[in-house]
Image (cartoon, rainbow, N blue to C red):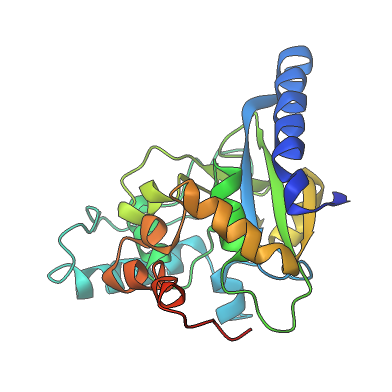
Length: 261
């Protein structure tokens, strides 16, 4: 994966260049589907890890994870009116490598839960480079000197094959409000052992990611201000009252209270 260091003032031009390169690549070589996805991380040294990987180091099968998704889905369905539909049919994912595996069971429910904090094998991306930049520059850890936006070029085979690595979940699913607000897409990785499909790490698919843009954390104030003018802020990304208040803390500065660095 190519690493490019830049400043926020150069970001728009770089994204435009990457988009143009993707259009040429798609038209001339036919090796990829047209389009890019972007993932922002508030520490450039972080690896591409899912929340499930951060939660447990134990290997988990697709079947076991689906059972967990059903359990938490049934627990909260009376409290979440926008919860996607639940498919209670038993799913057993035990497949030879010759059979194509086309997607996660209960994918819309899995996406919804991922956006509300349930550990997930889905790595989230956005179709918008600026949404990704918001997640890179928002809430930067104190020990982070640089943030990053990783650029992913869509594979021709959207869902991959069992045992062959990277799978993509597109934007047009009913995954809840945050899924729509963030123009989200997702990737997950699989491997097959003893004819059982397990989740795998994105680190084993690193060559499929196009570019990693690395920007200094000190550009955050300028970046967040520019993004807010695009209506990309905590409220537009999350849609909660807490986020609305947090997006408007600058009101205190209007009354003469300077934020402590």
